[in-house]
Length: 291
Image (cartoon, rainbow, N blue to C red; front, side, top):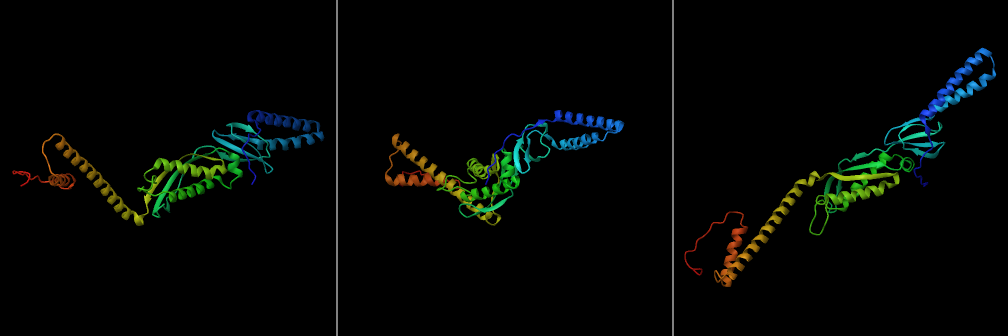
């Protein structure tokens, strides 16, 4: 495939050429008047060709808006791109294709795909892009806007299947837990696919992420169970630390001497009081520790 890179096209100031064309029509009017007065036939040989040329020249005028461009094609050959805004005149036989250099947003539809674990999820993303090489956008792909949409959705599908929806002990990154890293990875994948079209990806981010409706309730219960287990784990870890601290303080300050059985009983009571979901009811021992 022939590779075409953008280059600057030759152009003339549109106002100067407009002045030339107007001057030409004034000269044409003068020739017409002289031909009528003198009835000289040779004047027609100048008047008619010049009139045709002046009308052809009108096809060379073009107006370029800011952040806009025109790709010029002369008889099937790319001759350059005009990026400078203003009023210009170019070869009137060139075909002028408009390419916007403005920033575009592509908001994908919700895509249903399986994540790394095979769970069906719904995902959508926003891709912010712009054309940086107008020649490649026109000549290397059939329709660069449609190409951006298709390749972006393909990259989103590939990314979703490479990561799990939620992280587990064996995984460092997940779609839900590492949004910044996932957005950067999505940007890299989309940029790799769209470089051929002369498109630059400015930003990409996930706009929608959820389990598919058929498993949403089951996954919600799973997340709730995981949250309960994690919370109870933290509570037990804290309770063990507090018991250890209490036994250490009693031993170091010589408040009371406890044998192994009494330590076990004290540990049991403290853990029940600290870990229990209901408020513990204190029991006062009015005798000795061994009664």
